[in-house]
Image (cartoon, rainbow, N blue to C red; front, side, top):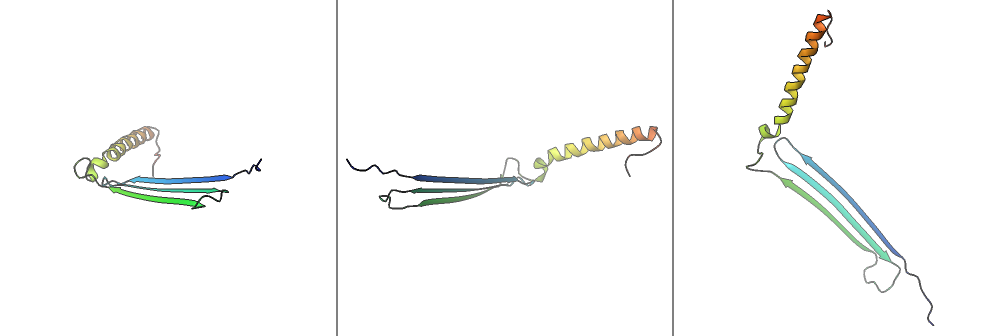
Length: 102
């Protein structure tokens, strides 16, 4: 009876991704993936096996959502609501004789 040998397999997988949208409508994304595999078997030709990939993508829409105005419309609405709240707070504070804002 042949002796029984134990094999050890090791696997490491690491991933990282990043995505950013800009006011001009440009979208940027990047991902980095790495895989490392090794085994105690001597029959593998490539040991350890390492595979690394990096992907970068830049997208600029030309018709749908192009430009600064469509991409900042929610920012403008937020500023309008904030200004309205500040005016209401100032009006309420003037009723009491002192201002909250400098």
